[in-house]
Length: 89
Image (cartoon, rainbow, N blue to C red; front, side, top):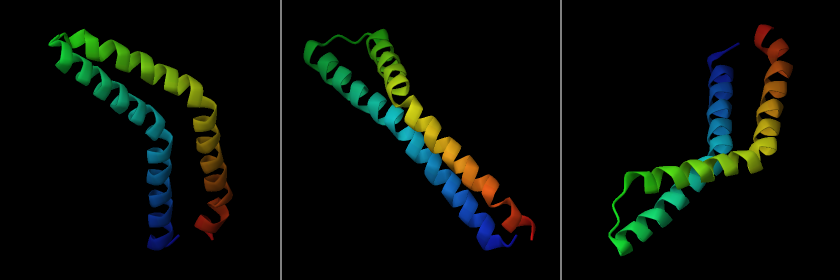
C-alpha cells in the first residue's frame, strides 16, 4: 500500500463522515436559527428554549434519515473490505 492509496482512503472516509452527518447538522442549524429569531423577536432569553427543540429535531432527523445513513456507511465499509487485497499486494 502506497501513500497515495492511504490518502485516498482517508479522503473517502472524511467525505463519507461529512455526508452522513450533514442531515443532523443542517437540521440543528435550521432549528437553532428559527428559535433564535423567535427569541430575538419576543425578547425571551431562556436557554432550554434553544436546547430542547434542537435535540428533538436532530433526533427526528436521525430517525428519518437513519436507514440512508446506515446504507452509506455499510456501502463504504464493503468497498473498504473489497480493497483489502489491493492494500496487501
